[in-house]
Image 1 (spheres, helix red, strand yellow):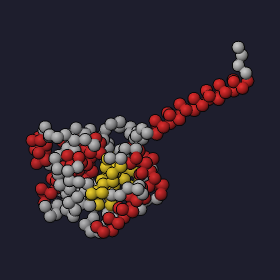
Image 2 (cartoon, rainbow, N blue to C red; image 1 turned 120 degrees about the horizontal axis):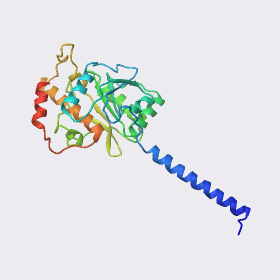
Image 3 (tube, rainbow, N blue to C red; image 1 turned 180 degrees about the horizontal axis):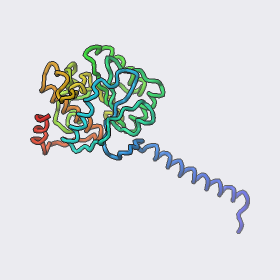
Image 4 (cartoon, helix red, strand yellow; image 1 turned 45 degrees about the vertical axis):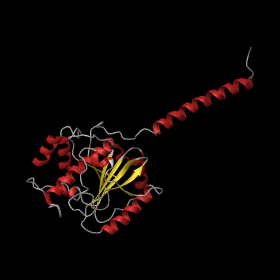
Length: 263
C-alpha cells in the first residue's frame, strides 16, 4: 500500500526531528565536558594570569613551586617554562590559574569576566594571591566587586579550617604566607567545590629566591616555620585544584618532612 503525500511528508518531518533531537543531545553533552585542551595532556603547568597591574611580583617563586611539586608529590609538572597568559581563549589550556593582586584586584573588561566565569564553570580553578603589605581594605572591596561581576548570586566565603583543602596533601597547614595578616583562606564555592581560593598573605613571596638560591624575603612574624606552613599550603591548594580529594594518612610523611628540611 502506497503512502499518501501527507504521510510521506509527516515521516520526513519526524525523521528530521529525530536527527535534530540527536544533534541537540550531542551539543548538550559536549557543552558539559570541561573545555581544557592542554597539549600537555594531564601534566600540570603553572599558569600566571597576565593583567594590567603587577601580575608577576615574584618571578622566581613559580619555578621553585614547580620544582618542589616534582620532587615531593605525585604531580607531574611540565618541563616547559611557567605560562604567562592574558585573559583569552588561551586560558582554557590551563585548569590552574594564578592571579597576583597588589593592593587591589586588577580591572577586567566584561569580556574578560565572561571568560573567567566560563573557565571556572568548566572545572577550572583560580588562585588569587594578595602580594602587598598594606591596602587590606581596598583589596577586600575590589575582590568582592570582582566576584560579584563573575557570579552575581555567589559570595566569597571564609574556608573552614577543617575543610578538605587543608587535608589535600599535608594535614592542616596554617594559612600563612610571606606575611601573616589573616589566619584564613577565602573562597568562592561553585556547585560544592572551591572554584577560586584567595590568600591575603603573599604566599608566592615565601617561595621567592635570589640567583644564589637564598630566600629573598623574611617571613613575618613567624620566620622559617611560617615559611614551611606557606610551602605546605601551596602544595595543598594545587593538589586540591587538581583532585579535590585527600588522603586520611600520609604514608610517606617522614620522606616529605625530610624534603621540607632540605628545602
